[in-house]
Amino acid sequence: MAAARADGERRIGVAIDYSESAKKALDWAIDNLLHHGDTLVVVHVLHHGAEETKHTLWAKSGSPLIPLSEFREPEVMQGYGVRPDAEVLDAIDTAARQKQLKVVAKLYWGDAREKLCDAVEDLRIDSLVMGSRGLGPIQRTGMRCSASDRFSWEA
Image (tube, rainbow, N blue to C red; front, side, top):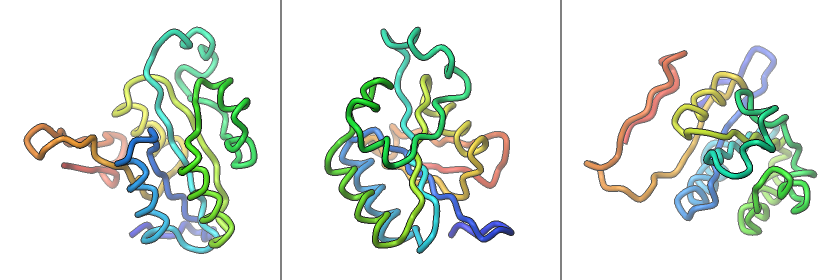
């Protein structure tokens, strides 16, 4: 369970790629981990591709933090190369209202394993929740953020 900082703030990250597994992870985090007043950080990692040159400014650091009000706007997110999912937005909106969450999104470009570790460190995320990729236990690979052994996850 994520512990509160000295200032009382908890930052709970959820890795979102709009897959069914990621949606279940979001639902689980909302139901079991997020508390009144927490900050929900939606982390989305895009693969390198045709849009890459458009985002060279943020290649290493990721996008600026995107508040929920902008994350809801399709035209804003399309500028980043993301098409938000209505089901995910509805779940986040409902949780934000009911639990009075502060919600921000952060986009990264590159290898998801590397960028999720960067997000944990850069954003000081207390817990990161993510779905599996639908692989069996033998096919899954564990991941550890080397900067701090307190953030690790294994299949």
